[in-house]
Length: 172
Image 1 (cartoon, helix red, strand yellow):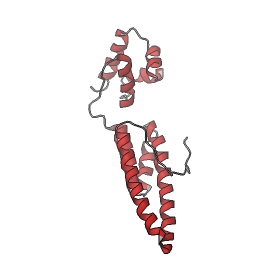
Image 2: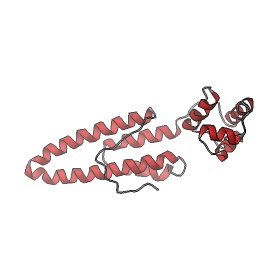
Image 3: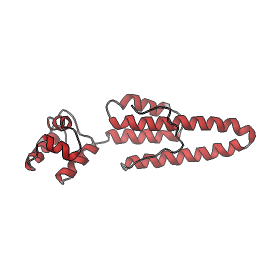
Image 4: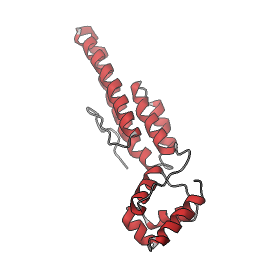
């Protein structure tokens, strides 16, 4: 289903249930303006929005080729495998106004990457004292597994967690 067809279908389902836009917004935990924009065909609803509306209607609503926010979120989390902040920084600055989830995820990913870069630097300095080699190896394995785990969790729409991340950047 594509826009405006999905908006027409949602408006039709809402009317069949005898709901106003305000009622639908309240039951789906969305705002009224979002419902209006979807029904008018001004926006294509995100997967998470369709999921909330599906619960209200008791149906499965979907959009073909919905690779939008979820793909960007997964790519952002996967970029942590290599602790270079350029990839998540680019995604975060480019997409955060367009996709609200990107802003929250981007701050968390960047905080994790900054923290891990700091820890890796300290470990590299400690190579002179032999313990640094062990720390570098342990951090490398830790970063790899946390990044992959969080990317999978985001793809499955589950909560993610970055342990040992220092919060240098605060959420807006």
